[in-house]
Amino acid sequence: MSSGDDEQGGWPAADGTPIPGFFLRTPHLMHHVEIVSRLEGGHIEHLEELIRASTLVDGHEPVGEHKFLRMRHGDDLAMGFLAYEGEQLLGYAHTLTFDDGPERRVSCEIVVDPQRRRGGIGGVLLEHVVRHAEAQGAGRLDVWSYNDSEPGRHLARAFTMAPTRRLLHMHRHPGPPPHWPQPEGASIRAFQPGADDEMLLALNNRVFAGHPENGNWTGEDLRGRLAQPWFRPDDLLVLEVSGVPAGFCWLKVEERNGEGRVGEVYVIGTAPEYHGKGLGRYLLSEGLRHLSERGVDAVAVYVDQSNERAVALYWSFEFHHHHVDVLYSLPLPAESREKAAAAADTATRPREG
Image 1: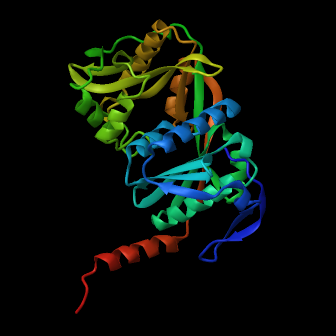
Image 2: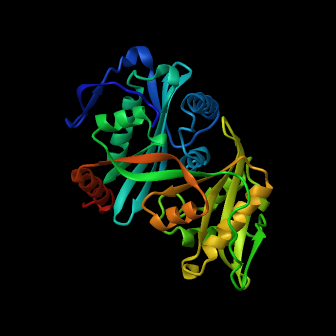
Image 3: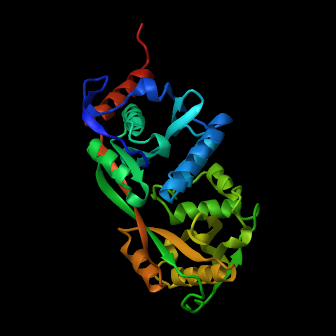
């Protein structure tokens, strides 16, 4: 979240439920909030300008790639909220609805023009998102605060949201990594576009089954990433054991403002049946060696703080703490789920007479 809103009292929702109030000044700040299921044309141009401005001020990108790619290509489970004043985009939020076991959840990111913050725009967008999540029958709304910024914490407090997840951003200085011996039967090769697409998609969804960002990818999700300007086939390392795909290490090299040429361990994992065999360490070692040869100025990785084994692995490879992104969550009323279920039942029940 990058919003910077001021709280003021309580603002009743359409159903009478009190939600936070803000110094909205809406008639002077924005004309309307446009809600779309796909970004296209002017949306993308305006949003790219907003993201550049926010990144320059905050030092980090305000939205993650996963939801942004879904919005660019269109997705029934993704939704975008654009706050405009005339033709100027003042703020943006996007959501992704997904099922986490028996519970439906909505995940959200919000960004507001740095020159127009502390005017209530973030609060207005989040209020729209809350209503959307309830209409989806979600039991929980999650909102990311990247770099755990003070504006993000303020907005979370205003909506009585609590921190539920912490994503560590760890860095490593460039240079050769600690050596890890090659396990018996293991080999690494570069990804082959076209020939390896279906294999990689199936492998990814086995490796990250149940993961909120990396799990359950579709062919469109994979193609969107393969089409990114930073993608190079030789930066996607495929691990094989006796000729069978067992894991992969996807590396992302790009210039980042103020950091130089950064090599990110974008996605890394091994299939469940190969856990505990030292293959993950070998794969990471080879990925870091590859980045060293690519001449990066720093190496970055994101890892969930609760994944203690992975955090310990990165510490052992000389990574250090850089910053933390925090997920704030809002439990939604149980009755919102019950209403959605009743509406669905009514819609599918045969008419009498």
